[in-house]
Length: 232
Length: 336
Image 1 (cartoon, chains in turn green, orange):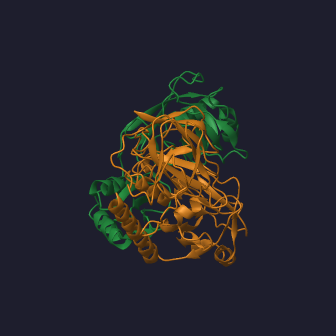
Image 2 (image 1 turned 90 degrees about the vertical axis):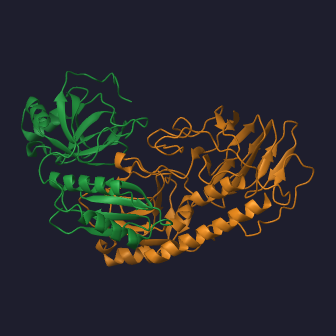
Image 3 (image 1 turned 135 degrees about the vertical axis):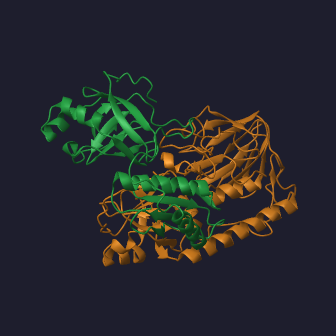
């Protein structure tokens, strides 16, 4: 498992947070994905939900059915048996291809991102579509993936003023991450394109298109998709 | 199938249950009733499983028409509810007891203030909302679940399931409309499970970043009162008071209902049922599960104080409450 020892700390009286690293990186994400799968398979008594973040796994439990310290011990024991079993390189999930129409109405911030990076918009698209992205976690809104692996040349601070309305399907970047807005919502990231794929569908199992640990590749398609075909 | 029709929706009336578990990894939070205790008691009163779908009423209750008669129960804050029969006869009905609403009658739920912020209206048989991701409740942020993913509107016709059992038959505890005189209802033998008075401090556990807050902020958090602001909703109870100085946080982390975050403004937010599953603000404390219903009942303007308890104490209090609820349930069985 991770070189650093794992720690388990409570978050209130109904959640334990297993910390597997301190930073954001693809290797930690793989460890987190493996630990999440292991804990889910263990079906520990009283556990009602398990969720990965960048470097932790949250174990939500029913405090009437599980004792926090007993559960903490069971988690330790379970993850100890995982030690050494996690590959430090290579994929843990499938590669998911996300079609994106870049620029124009679909990506109103592409020009600004290009100017910030001192590159042509075409080069921004080339770098974004050739990089391998890893889902660090799902959060912010149902189905919203935080993707790691944005090339350093594209790194950019968040918008000074968040947009009040970012359309569903918008592919946006900030710092060293890419996000995809499953719902039309306010947002502070730079929108460089838009995908017609539904990131979330409550009738699907699991409802989110992506899971923490999945690998993602963006595929450029001709725009505009602004008609919103397939976007919920 | 039986149904109820919304004549007037009230301020914000949604279908809720005890929440949606198991989909956090897809970014789906728990949702569910803001006051789970009142939700459970309302269902038990009409003979439903405690997690059946029911209406959550916010501040001002709805007016509902019952084409077919039904047993209902209102719990928590709402007062002054009235049943009006088809021939125009009005009967005031209390909270906390089963009420028979006859065919063709309407039920007007009263206001929640000043007793609290929310009420539960349970109907025998439970509301027949679709089971989505393990829950029947309305996710207002994402627009799915409950009734078409939204708050109720006038004209909505909400299907009701078939009641599996009857409420207590003992007329000292129930109201059957119409009746000639308002009855003197007898309190439940074992009392009703309650939140306790509104004034004692909300019990919290230290949050993961508690130690990173400056001493002055930590002290202010536990000594000062905070006022609930009007922009509070099902995703969070927003507070105003002494400004806390949040430490720097570099990454979004997991949050749960009851997590108290300090955003850059320094004015704390208590996350509630419809919270996002992750958050990037420092977590100074987390409300103990026992007191989450009290957060759901705190109306705008309410003054809240916080007191620290340990994990063992939090667990003990919850077990004690569950025992009270179990005795209450057995008492209802006895009177059936």
